[in-house]
Image (cartoon, rainbow, N blue to C red; front, side, top):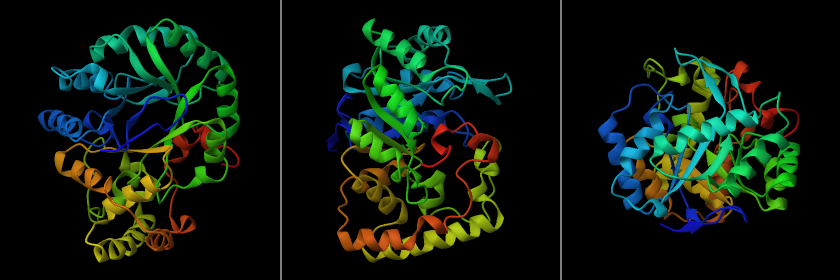
Length: 334
């Protein structure tokens, strides 16, 4: 597995990271033993970046990672943690809180759940409209000085917020959705990140499974799967999006590959400052990511891939209306 340093102020990580959210939350039931086996397989394949959030399964995901890392060398793993999303006892999302006192409280718990004494990259999951981003970043910077955190990250914020954050303290990377079906960052957000030397950790590179090539219009979502409310997975939107995937499948099969591998390889091709996160919950899913890391797409293939899935042809927004309202990255121009 090759490595990348996505941001000039960030750590060196594997070219692909493992997103662990689905092992605890939001995609329906997951198998604990298989989840741990998948983390082990990722580490054994040279994947060093594990991404989580303290609200994934209300702490479950951090505890799962702790158990998976038993017997492993902590310094060989980069753990990225999101914070600030508030949930009620039923699991519903009820807001965002990045007040300085709240952040210090979160950091009292996360390292204990992870079984570590520091967090590699710490980032607010969303912009808190009631707290200036300068206060949020300044608090994390204080935690860096105190040794609890190594690097400062951002998530789903727009170009102006990125500039304001970077003016307070060095930011390692921006975590944001980026895929063949979600290319909004290319207009303003990605250029600003590159101007400032901030890397991009790209989640949703398979567009929540749409680009896996394994989704079908007849598939029923299990209880707790947020895709049951995602506009891209509804009715005519889903049919239109699956037609795009079939065009991608034709290109993939011509080179003995599959849509998932091509979609991940495309994300890798966008620049050495971009690290795709793959949300594999099972070892079989992880295989596509590992294969994709070794694929080299020629210019002609990249052009054909992008022609197969033009951004304007994708049907539906990436979140529902209520969730989109919380995305600073979607306010105004990208």
